[in-house]
Image (cartoon, rainbow, N blue to C red):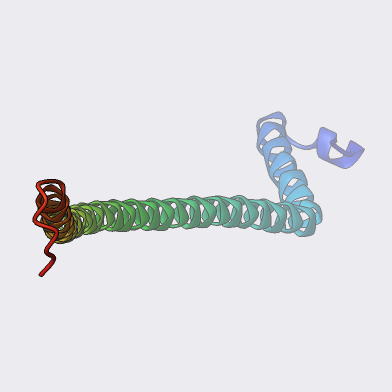
Length: 156
């Protein structure tokens, strides 16, 4: 915007003055916009800080998740290893117990067989003794009966 006084001045200087006016308008606009621009700049910085903080939180969650997952896998692996060791140990203990039980059973069978053989031998001996005694008694009775039948009549 040029004033009437400026228009009457020399024509070469008008362009210069118009440019000076534009610069002045721009400087004036910058002064008016400066608090707004400063506010926008601060808001942009705050937003950038917020985005950075959000990324940091995201990274922290990811690290926490990875550490938790790693701890879980390590615990699971330790539990599996402990289970495997206990299972293996229990298997060995079972085999030992079975062998001991089999050995005890075998010894018990042997003792039972020995006791059976002893009882059978004793029973056979008792039977044979009684049969001998009965035969002896039968023989004596028959001899006496024969002797009486033949007329000897004597009984000793």
